Length: 238
Image 1 (tube, rainbow, N blue to C red):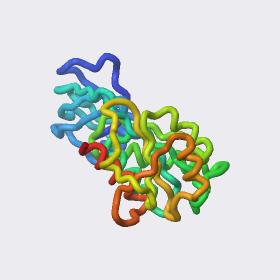
Image 2: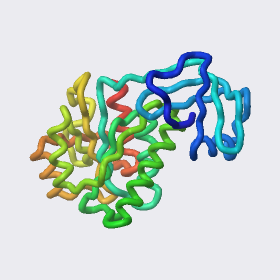
Image 3: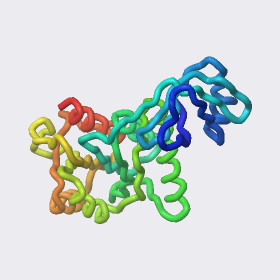
Image 4: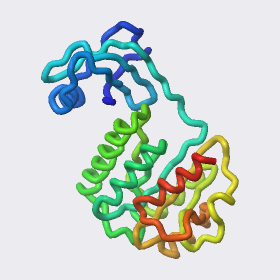
């Protein structure tokens, strides 16, 4: 699957769509897509087309529209507040929650995060998260790209709890398990995932005071890279 601009309304069957720019060059020169191969082009907002490639050069591919696709917004939208983590931990988390269909991702600068986003590094790191999410969207063939917000402090994150119908704070000392929590069928859920060092007591107090509910998702302590995916899978299966 490739991401590119699509006209509104979506083109009719039999018409041609040209994918150019960086994505078109990637398709033609890196992926070596050739005439006859079937591809999907999505615009990242829930719309896509599929069909065979009819032309390919060094800078673009042309696709004949055989099928149009529209993915509506989900009834239950899931936001993940993911604490900043070192190494590839954040990448792993971002890939999995994108594949599972997260609607929004909030980078969380928690107290115990070793990685710090500030100045130029914040802009570069945000761009890297957005690129990772974009690639994971393509890999999973989802037509919607999750929104990646600006980095949030704990105080800022607490203010976002009111924007959601339910906020789950994943914590190893919680007394309530996720399956015991009543979930809304529609609306917005936020999952808050701490860093490798865990959520600091004062942060947990602040998040709970704002309406967050601590929950347990495992009988062991999960890594920050996998916790959100486990919670999302549990929610989606219900």
